[in-house]
Amino acid sequence: MEVVDIHASCDREFIAMVEEESEQKVRLCYQCGNCTAGCPYTFAYDIPVSQVMRLLQAGQKERLLSCKSIWLCATCESCTTRCPNEIDVARIMDVLRHMARREGYAAEKNVKTFWDTFLDSVERHGRVFEMGLLATYVAKTGRFWTDIELGPKILPKGKLSFKPHQIEGRDKVAEIFRRFREKEASR
Image (cartoon, rainbow, N blue to C red; front, top):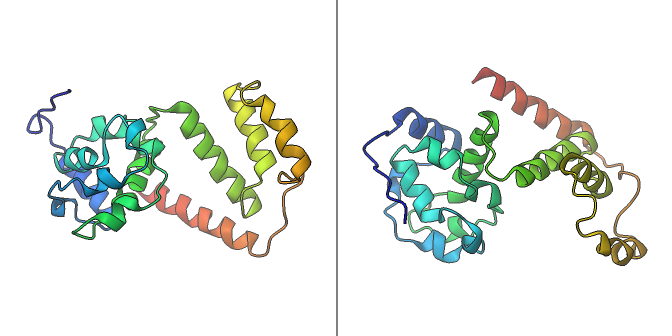
């Protein structure tokens, strides 16, 4: 078990930034553990959700932004639903992931690569283009032979289109990304 001296390097500015971006009050968390108990990915996390919240309260920026838990969070909102203080924990995890991405942290490089590739696909096409996502992810990670046996099972079912779907409102989705980039640039 790792011991963290919560008084050694409390980054109060980091706490304030997370609270501002997430619009949540992290100090309301009293470590009941409901978030961790309801999380379907706790088994894969290096830091359980309740400990993420505690480290956040202690201003442990480096430890949080370099952990793999924030990248593995599926944002299923089980933690948020179970929180007795109505803290949107999933939103905090999302904010931590955005902060880590902005500042160049990537504990799980392939997960970050997938996340970035997914967002690029949504920005470009208005929704995810699965075949393009797959091809780009494989090219970026070099994982050419991973799960290759799934191809013959998936392709005949027609679930993966070789062309992106044309959707209404694609320009509106692109506008959301543009506004997000502007907001990020002003920080």
